[in-house]
Amino acid sequence: MIWGAVGPPWWDDRVTVVIGGGPSLSGFDPRAIPDRAHIVGVNQAMLDFPCEAGISIDFGFVARNQVRLAEFAESRPLYLAVSDRRPERMPAIQSAVYLRSVSEGLSGPDDYSSAVVDGGTSGFAALQLAVLKRARHIVLLGFDYGLQGDRDHYHDAYVGHGAGADAATWQRWAENFNVIAPQMVARGIEVINASPASQISCFPKCSIEDALHAVS
Image 1 (cartoon, helix red, strand yellow):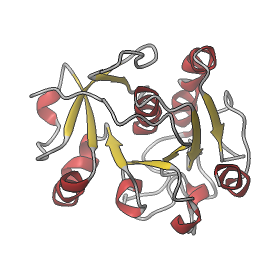
Image 2: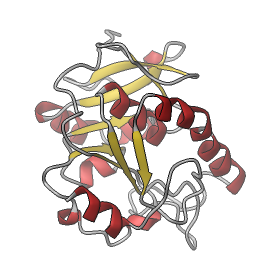
Image 3: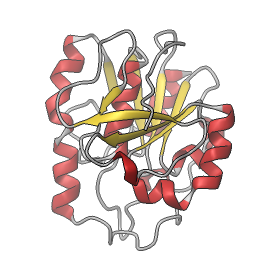
């Protein structure tokens, strides 16, 4: 495994939109995202939305989508974060940037870093990627971290909506954000969660429409 790193170009010039997979994005029109935003997609979202970069810590997702992800990586940065203890489990994707995955703290603030804090989910790692890219204003889309009705994703690419994680697991993953939120405030990084029903409670919330209006 050859470790890569996150470097320039930096994302401190515009708002960064991080797109997760939550059910609040069901029926969402990707054309609603202003062109002026930096956009990073989490797992399936990087394949469904016009993203500038993509990230995953999900070994199963990467294994199921090796061909599509290899095509993605030919034109845009694809970051795959893996634990030092199990890098051999992540499939090899040509042109992908492999980052170390660590379990504590807030990524950065090194000028050039090769590690992200995953917090148990690819969405958490995506927020860390935005920090490493020096984003100052971040909007989270689809960061519901729980069920809406019987769905836990906006798409049907995964088998068994609601079957992959129980309520307690979603809550635990959501609470992982509580640890880094004060550190982000201390660094002057603003995060808006555009999912009013999200279980992530440490960032200000608003509707998707209000968040995108602010970006534009």
